[in-house]
Structures are given as C-alpha cells and as structure tokens.
Image (cartoon, rainbow, N blue to C red; front, side, top):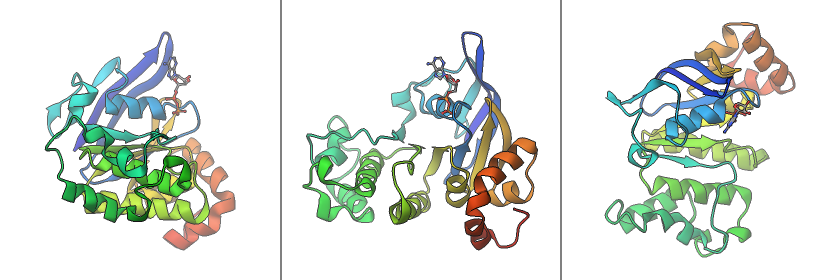
Length: 250
Ligand code: ADP
C-alpha cells in the first residue's frame, strides 16, 4: 500500500501541492486528474522520487521512503512521449534497462512480457516504423521488464486515438490485474480517468478536490469544482458514461 501523508510542495512562494493525503491499495489503478497546472505531474514526480517534496511523508508497504532515492524506490515511469531510443529496434529498447541488472529477469520472462503485449511481430522494427499504439506497448514492455513496484504513467493515452486508445486502455487494465501492479496515471481527461481507473484523485490548484471511485465521483460529486470539471467536459461524451454506469445524474 502507498500512503501519501501531508505532502506539500512549493516553488519559491508558489504553492503547487498543499497537504495531499491519500492511500492507494496494492494493485489499484488510480488516476491523478486535473486541469493543466493543477500539480498532477509534480505529484507523480514526487512519488517517483524525481522531485523532492517540501513537507510530508511517503509510506510504501509500511516503510517510510520519503528520503529513499528514485533508483532505490524501484517505481518506474512511462513518459508521455515514451522516450524510446530511435536508433535501436523494439527488442533492444525493451531490454535496454536490463544491461546493468543481471539476474533481475530471465529471458523467458522477457518473452512472456513480449507475448503479453503482443509485440512479437514487431521486435526487429525500428521505433520510427511503429504505430503510436505499438510504441506505447514497447514503452510498457520496457518498463515491465524492470519489475516495477509501482507503475507510473504520464498521459498514456494522449497521443492515441479511437480504437488504439481503447486497446491501450484495456492493456493497462490487464497489466494491473495480471501483475497485481499498483498503477498511477496522470491525465487531464475526465473520460479517460472515469473509464480506466479504480479510483480518481481530482486535484484542483494543488489540493485534493475529491478522491473516490468513478461511480462515487459521477453520482456524488463533492463540490462545485468536481461537478463543473467533470460535467462540462463530459457533456459531449454523455452517452459513453450512460453505457458504462447506467442511469446517473450526468
Ligand atoms: P500539471 O501536471 O497538472 O499540468 P504541474 O505539476 O506540471 O501541473 O505544475 C503545477 C504548477 O507548478 C504549475 O504552475 C507549474 O508552473 C509549476 N511548476 C512545475 N514545475 C516547476 C519548477 N521546476 N519550477 C517552478 N514551477 C514549477
């Protein structure tokens, strides 16, 4: 379980995160949802260990990891632009991080991740020859072979559309279920958060506006911000939500 206790962050006089308290259970998919500039990426980077918080604690499986380095935390991130190496092929990208990690995974396990993400036909292709969805799957495979204790995804669907977006969504869900892998996702899109996650942390100007399941957020929005933010952006996508959750007040 991951617990954030009173996590705060400021840059000079600007408060970016104010007193964030949240508990994420093992294997849960949690979206950090908010408008641009609300503090989502900062929170993701604090969890990863890339950005230092000014106040608060991070507890992982009952151990205080607040001062543990990014490397020693063992959480891994897939960046929004995937950050794949263009001069290497898909397979070389997938195993790149294993170079100095002898014994972390066997070749058989690597092949299992490759099969799981249906990447076998693409292994010898250069990154430039892959579609957006294939690139995302390579990025996911490259991260999974590192056996992350928590998987962090920064806007994983933003570069994808339509059918490919749906298929990556399902893959993220099956990864979390299959490997019981806690997955934390940054998104600015309410529909993505509602259809992808077990729980959603809505952040407004560095503060938690609501933390709950998609159903709770749709049916019991805690305040006007949640109502406005979710409803406004969902008006055109209303039918999708009806289909997913049945009759609601949307
Ligand atoms: P989001 O991911 O929700 O778009 P961010 O976490 O990237 O938001 O940013 C939240 C706020 O913190 C923004 O106002 C941004 O300008 C500010 N910020 C982020 N990183 C820095 C930094 N390194 N120095 C100063 N301000 C920063």
